[in-house]
Image 1: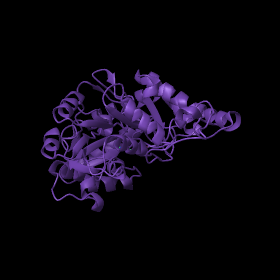
Image 2: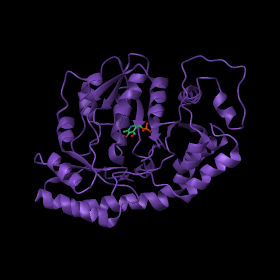
Image 3: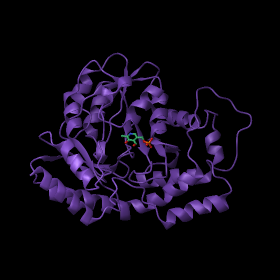
Image 4: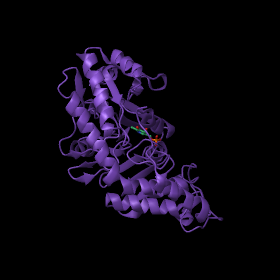
Length: 372
Ligand SMILES: Cc1ncc(COP(=O)(O)O)c(C=O)c1O
């Protein structure tokens, strides 16, 4: 049976977990997490003390927002994103301000965002949707012009580059997710990467109940007994088990996972590219994309019928995402026309390293037959 997405795990991950279970003697946050941070840093080409691993991508975003944005301040965010981006902002007591997206790239529309700036706007949270990095040059120009901090939701974009620079190797604060179906997984997990040492110090402490400087001690098996706490903290740390899985996954990304994901995306593009009722997202020209998902748009009100047809043929599909400004908790008094239109057309097709070429051929055949 074809699956929409999948954790692709093998013997090496199993051996790594077994090593932690049977040899390490500690399953919580210890030296393995420090090693995973060092591995991520070396992959991104940044210094290892600038990477902080946590238990989910959502907590990475939450801690990043809380470190930067005060209660009641506003964060510009595209409505067309996973609920996590919004929950992370509101969990920090900040206010998500829903923005539209560009119809071609599905990245946050900076003109629309500019029109929503108030004296409470503190930050912008762009989302690298479907692994397509937003136009980073324009984004940082925008942030500079309006004096905003940037918290990149790079949950989909681990391993992707913009102008040959890896997402996370530059910029203000960048948050990744390593949940079960991302470009690499640690089971569940996430990371914050930033050069801002104040933010680093806050998030390192906050992931462990805000106990001052306890975090690093754990990497050498120590604890703090006489400590101080100056702010709210959480139990958001990563475990050694998760880190062990993540380290193996990272070692497999460039040689195994990325080529397979890219090959499958190219095949979808080839087989559906000439269908006038199918629209692919326009990728930034200077980006290297390891697609976490492939989401196409189905024109002429045919999305729902096609989704049903695919399901009949046992092909699972998804809708990434229901816009957040349509949810009761985040409802806006204004419309976001592009987001709402795209929402009615978007369809996510199966993509993970174990999808076969013949699966994609089969799926595309059904789509082309149905739409023609
Ligand atoms: C755009 C986006 N942001 C944030 C997250 C949150 O990551 P996690 O599932 O690790 O909490 C996800 C995960 O699905 C996501 O797709």
